[in-house]
Length: 142
Image (tube, rainbow, N blue to C red; front, side, top):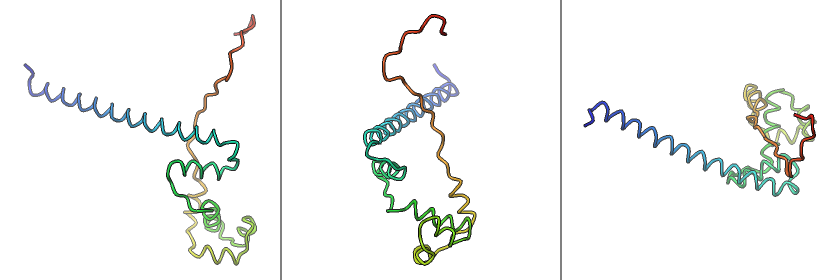
């Protein structure tokens, strides 16, 4: 016969095991989805050449709606916030100051510009696998 404390401990252990299995299942589903999206990009890689196009393709496959030219507009907006120089930003972007004044009326604080340009993706470790048979080792090689 189990005492109250032992019964509670078994219940907590069971709840932890269920939580862990649910978390593992969710992680497995996320991993499968990430692999699927990576496969889609690889299949279309010969067609998709620019980074912008690759990001847009991944976003579309993940059902994320990215507005047209959103990266260009963000770059110009936050470049002006960072530098405060519309003329230089217009030159860098291949635009005119008049066009920037028409499209980018809401100025952003410098801190937002710094934060936007500081964004970096998390590093991903890739393990290269030789596509063919492994050649035999020669004598004297480790």
